[in-house]
Image (tube, rainbow, N blue to C red; front, side):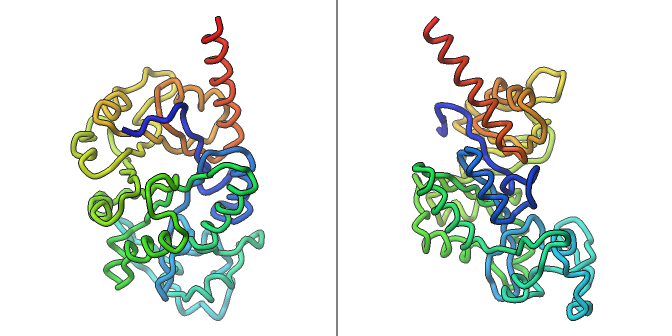
Length: 289
């Protein structure tokens, strides 16, 4: 069972409350604010490279819509359950993607390889191992395009020597079929991400292929209401619980720490780090009282 001595603070896409999400600067800030780990999302380029983006459509986070040379690549696709119009990573080579700028600031598209190097450098700087949660986005969709994500992901992790337990690297996805399949090919801990009613979660089933669940925060507790039984149910089946996504202050973080979660994904890492420090200090006072 995953049972940390204290809850973990995980920088969600870096520190996007302060800097553009998924940028090297955002991840660097999160790590220097004291997170235990950072979280990233990966999609695929046309030439099969894992790039760091929350979605494969590019117009929200790059200047692609302003680039006349790419006007003819605007199209409409069905990604998952949604029909989306725009420009898509799988229609661009890595060289083309990394040449794109952000709409307001020059924070370039980065690769998973670059992020892993940054985590390694910042871990050395901090004198501690900083972890990484890798969320695989739309793996079935990309596989259907001839861009299988599993092989690319596992190869990249092997290249960086973080393919084994103990590296503080977690693989996660909302796609339960993908999480089940990758469980057969890696010993790394896995997180089944969830977005449903807490009562629909089958912790016994998830425990057969994953080490933790990642529920949205309302599945654990809503403001002004008591906590649901989900954390206790997950722990009873040996599952850790990482809740997403905290975007408010210390009080919100304390609410989820008090609910017994094993970690929180946050857009404001410093706030959750502060809340955790207060919690640890209070625990020390209680122990010496």
